[in-house]
Amino acid sequence: MADLRLKSRHDRNKNRLFQDHDMPTKSTAGAALALLALSLSASLNAQQAAPAPGGAEPSRQTAAAQNAATQQSGLLPSEDAGKLEAESRQAYEDGEYLRFYIANMKLHKMLPYVPQYMYNIVRACALLEKPNTAYHYMLKMQQQGLAYNFNETEDSQNIRNTQAYDYINNMMIEAGNPAGDGTVAMTLAGDPADFQAIAWDASRDRLLVGTLNEGTVLAADANGNSEVLLQADSENGLWSVNGLAVDPGNNRLWVSSSSTPRFAAHSDADGNRNALFEFELDSLGLVARHDLPNDTLYHELGGISVSDDGHVYVVDNVMPVIYRKRPQQAGLEPFVGSRGLVAFTDVAVTPDNSRLYASDPATGIFTVDLTAESATMVSGPETLNLAGIQSLEYVDDKLFIVQAGFRPERVMRLELEPNRLAVANVVPMAIALEAFDWPGAGTVADTDIYYFANAGAGEGAAGSVIMRTRLDAGSATNAIDIEDLQNMLKPQDQ
Image (cartoon, rainbow, N blue to C red; front, side, top):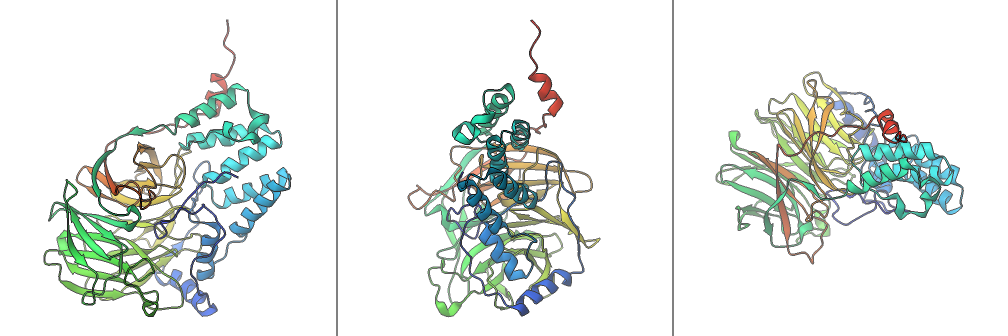
């Protein structure tokens, strides 16, 4: 079976998209009911997403990780993705290719953005000698910019040696070539996996980055020189730094932090504690610590976003929950959760606090209308694939995302429709660049997006590479109409 990988920001080890291991969890009936109530506490009407053409609700973590998260929330899907994956593997091993096809079709319907399931559907159709269906899904993958070479699997033998196969497969191979705009802005010393949080601080003209192991916040200049602004200690109470947000208008630096075994000073007595820390931006004095209420579930606070009026939103990297800190009000409150999602990697709020976006690498982008109090999934054209989102930024009716865990890893601009519920244009900005090895968290600074490029490189890497891509880079992709493809493949008159 092809080994496509998709990992969450809370786990920098390269795990298969859906693998057989559970994340830490202590599920109880009371906790499950509490989280179910949580999803209603914000009076949001979680609506079903209107499927984007070609499939719309995206995909994230691992089947087991997905199951752990949904079990924690008490919100189990009608069919378990982990069981379907096991069914897929067993059917393939048994040579029962119709079962293999059915299992992957169910998985694709459940998580339409996961490339592995489309890849398996093509293989199954080839083994079942259904070339037209195989070409349909190959074309679907190509339109979404995915880069796979079906010549690498013997399973494709029955659909090869046709104009359609060669044409689509060659385009998919080409999609994996490095392209777009991206330059190395700086390299920070240390294990790339240790750097998870990044934010632009215009007041210092520096990038701020956070570390997991030591719980530090560093300010880095354009040459990669850095100084320690904050260091976890008994006085400030910080642990691993998972998320950063700068709010210059309100003179605030926000830090999400978790006590986990990755934190060097972690002890069993610390347990699984999480908090949003509020510092003065100029003096770095601690203003307040907003603890996540202790329960029996496993949490890791992650990405943070702040509106102009001071509303702070922070996501849970393990569960599909967004927390909110209101201006002039102490404490974090559960704001919204969704039974159809797995967990979040990042969050972005519009400056006027009218709309919120949160990325789930398995199911796509969840959006909340903060005025109408309704929620849905972002939809889009056939060229849209929202798998593996590690970073999400909002600027002027555009979403900027960093995607990892499939081929090709990339930075994308999503130009929104006027209603801001759907993507009008999909624009690749940087694709499969040489430095890319699990690109991760990013931040916008003036006319550029800065992002960690090599979180998956391992301790042997020369350091953590931060890359820069222009916000206006790239041009919109256009889907190939199936009739156009058929016309292109017709024999030419002599």
